[in-house]
Amino acid sequence: MDLQHLLNLLTIILTAAGAFFLLVGSVGLLRLPDFYTRTHATGKADTLGIMLVITGLIINQGISVNSAKLLIIVAFVGLTNPTATNALARAAYHLRLKPWFKKDKQKKSEKKEKE
Amino acid sequence: MKQIFFLNSITKFILLFGFWLLLSGHYDVQHISMGLFSSLFVILFNLKLRKHYFYREKLDEARAKLEDVQPYRIRIGRLLYYLPWLVWQIVVASFQVAKVVLHPKMPIDPALMRFKTGLPNTEARVILGNSITLTPGTITVQIEDDEFLVHALMDASQSGILDGSLPTEVAKLYEKKPGQVLRKEDIKISKSNKGAEV
Image 1 (spheres, each protein chain N blue to C red):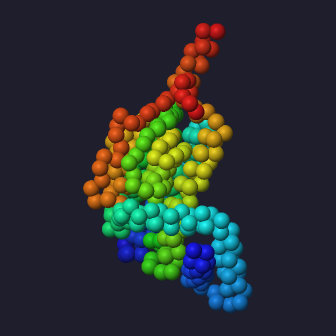
Image 2 (cartoon, rainbow over the protein chains, first blue to last red):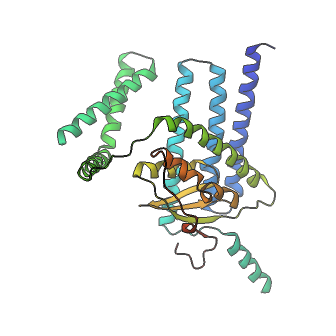
């Protein structure tokens, strides 16, 4: 096994791990109960997912102009992703959207049982 | 002052355009004119915003000069330590969140945390806010002056803020020995809509 094979293997592992985290983000978007918790899934499972995928691609490309561009993409995602997530959460907060809490949910189900 | 702002805009334009040329790699009329247009568009699009921040920055500088305090500058060396540290935090938190999301019973326990920090300036607050949002499991919902409102997905996500490690690292970007950035008593955690002023 020479170096090229090793690099390819590393690329595959990293990209697959990244895809896994992106998948977790989508699953979370479907499963989680309310807006705030769903923002967690969409906004941030992506963070690690994208970082892993791009790191894999950089390793695949070696040291080149393309790698530099990919690095810049990581930096931009790192800056814009939290900003957008924050804007969403803040907008929801200002519209007085009430967050989902475990305790409230339990109380509701207790009430239902009494009825 | 207006002139300085104009010059500032021109420099920004040249930087943007240079960046375009660096990235595009095609040097014909079509691509270069596209670059010119988009750089110009970006500059004009956020002109108002930049004006606001430009004047506020100048105001802050003048105020610092009057009061004879050294304005805080970010320490590049510390940044080299901070970024990998943050990435590591993101990795750890991602695994926690992935575990909870994929768990059949989904044992989440969301909480709203409200706390005040003693960070030196706006820039530091923005860095802290973005870092909190970047780490999976926590979102900054609102920053008002010194007060942060953070939504946490579960108890384990709170730990980075509760033990003060994240705010302290951010403060260290600006000061060598920051004072106590966050007091534990100041953190208010609410886990119910009742009695909360949401």
